[in-house]
Image (cartoon, rainbow, N blue to C red; front, side, top):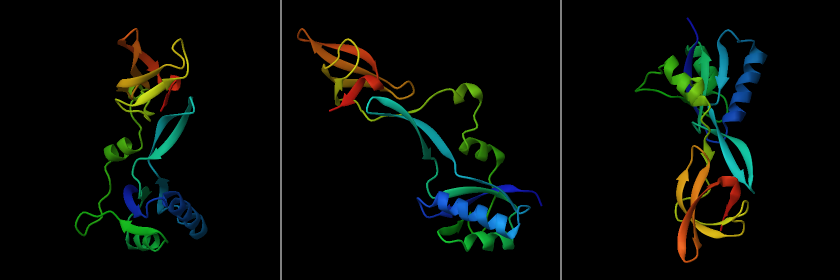
Length: 177
């Protein structure tokens, strides 16, 4: 029987705790031939905080852990008896493994050209008032008219000489009011 990926439902926020418990149990009971891999799918997001870029990891599936294992009655009961575990994800009464395509998509193992595309966690939305903190228009106040999440850019309308003028700015150049 080969190892396949299964989804384990756990209490939200306890994914790391449960994964650590499973790793400890696998080592203590020497059952590495039954459970080979544990994964909590996460996605990297670039967050702008105080004008600085930070990369944060966000769980793609809160409340779920992926486990590569041999599924049988022994491993199922061993895992479902762990504190904070709700059980395996089922279709009807049956537990089915994930396909390799589903696992690859969830683990963010995409082709290189799509992996290079960065994702920003936007803290501003259209029509938000912002203050420009960097560049030639420093200390100007404007209104966000467009947001480009993939590039981390915004278009801000600034009133100059009685007319609204659009400016493309980086997220590090503005703060929300």
